[in-house]
Image (tube, rainbow, N blue to C red; front, side, top):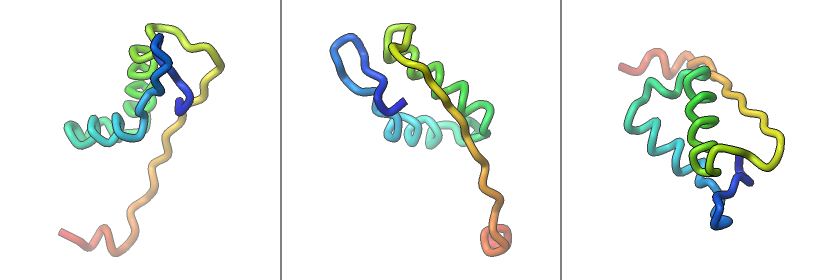
Length: 71
């Protein structure tokens, strides 16, 4: 997704876009939702089609013991 471009040749700002969207709605960080969100956002940016094959995946990292103990 890092190489996805729009008609003007502008790259899709994946990192910034995902950070903003997750900050607005933390529920989209759920892996299945995040994959759909990235796919749909990229397709919108590229005018509905991609020029190359694509793989999107999201991984949920388990909380550490310290993170679970924080209120």
